Structure formats: structure tokens, C-alpha cells
Image (cartoon, rainbow, N blue to C red; front, top):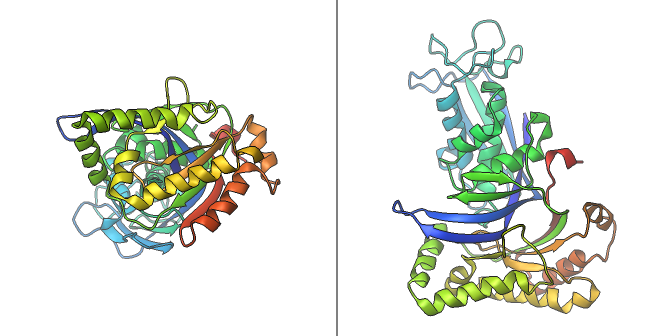
Length: 373
């Protein structure tokens, strides 16, 4: 089974409060984009069960492609997603009920079906092969997308009747971005049969997902500075800034300007846009501030050529900065795909020159399942 795992950007990220357990309540409009990792899930009878007497299959994970900063084995979120799915849903017995086998050997029920109900496939081992294209620790939810893809792939075999919301709820224990990624992965893999979403409002600590219908497609230019960002550190810096009234007022004004100053670009109903983590991240990492400023200047300079309406800001806790160009209608994105001089392409080419050695990428937003082509 081969699944695509799309990256995401945060068109808005507002921090509402800090909870007693240390987590932050947020409100964020997320959009999936056409930058994909791939997760291949293979089921075999090799090497027996996990050896712990649980009867669950053994999980093996390998990583290919852009592997910098990406662990394999139990340190990878996709590996933990597989373990979580097997614990929650069992090893499967071919009839889709997700129960563990009585004999504890991790096999199917003896009728030759095994995991996924596929004839001749034994469930004693699950191999996960990740092909990485999404940069790690970039604010693009690459690890969360991989985990979501694994959850959906195993749900297909172990719990074929489970709802998307239940898969997302299970994924919430792995990370705040995983629930949205479950919906976006479903949109990227319509063969799974779920009604996924390429855009959604994430609330709570990220576990409350409300799919939204975006006004249209959009083009995205990504620029990732070569710096490692610790999400917990950025949130701590945000908390410290909120204790300083001057900093808090400055951050609020910056976020208001981020959207309202971009020729009326709208993040969605009730959203003024911006990213509350942008100021603390930029303060801690000057190179991020340089990219935000530089990409914004490119968009401003190209405004006469049609780059008006671009939103330039940080994605998640960073360090990736994006420029987002909302299409006037859903067909614009497909027409622009053939236009060498559309605004996003111009900005992308300039960004490649201005930010040599950085990850610079041009792509589109991901539509909902019904609109996938």
C-alpha cells in the first residue's frame, strides 16, 4: 500500500491561552500543499511477531530520500503511529474486526486472509518505507503527515469501518498536527474512501478539526532557512513575550498587518490571519527574520507584475517562511500551471536567487477529495 503524505502551512495561527498542563489552546487555519512524503506499508510473514507476547506484528521502518534529521525505528513518529494503531485496533484477523489472535502468534485467523483481508498475506511483520521530500523540523508537519499516513493505511486493514474523526482522535496523542494531517492525507489518497479535507480549522491544542471549503486554489512559495527550531522553545519565548506588555502589543499589531495589509487576502471567516509564533521565532533566530523580510520585499517589488495579494509569514513554529497567492477562482491554479510568468513563479525565481543554498520550493494547495485530479 502506497500513500502520499502532504505538508501543510498555517494561514493563521492564534494562541488563545496556556493550559494548566502546559499545552496551548490555539485557533489555526491550515492548508495542505502539494509537497509529499510517501509511506509504503508492506505486510509479510517474515520474522515473527514482536516477541513481547502480545501477538502484535513486529514493525520495521526505513527512511529514504531527504533523511537529514529524520530518525528511523522507534524514534520516528510514523513508527510510533504503527505501534499505536496495533495497540488500539489489534493485529487484524482478516474479517476487519481488528481483534488480536487467540494463539498470540500475530498471524491471521487461518483462512489465509491475514492483515487487510488480502489472500495469502500474513500479518507477522509490517514494513514501513518512508520516502522523505518534506524537510524535517521545518514547520510543515512532515513527521505528522507520515504518522497520519501510517494510521490511515493500518486503519484500512485493521478497522475498515472506522470513521476519519476516530482516526484523527487517536492521532492526537502523537502530536498536535496529526489530526489535521489525517484529514489532509485522506484528501491526498481518495482510494481510501474517506472524505478528506485540504483545508481545516484546528482548535483546542490541534485535536478539534473542522474542515472548511476554501475559496479556491492557491500557489505557495516556501523558503526554509538552514536552522533547527525547537517548537517547545518557541512557545516558551511566546509565553515570556506575553508577560511583557510592549512585546505583546507589538506582536498583535504585526499579526494584524500580516493579513489586512495584503490587499484584502482573507484567511477565512472570523480569521484575521497572522502567526503568533512568528515574532518570538524571528527574535530567537535572526536568519528567520531575514527571510521573512526578504521574501516580503520580493512580493512587494513584484506587485506591479501581479504578485499583489501575497501573504508572507512563518508556518507553524518555523523556520519555513511562505508566500501564499490566493487564486481568484479554483480554475486559476490549473491555468497558471502552464503559465511561465504567473506571480508565484516570478517570486519563486527571485527567491532562488536571493536565498542561495536554502530550500526554496514552488507548489499549490491541495484540494478536497472530490476535487483531486
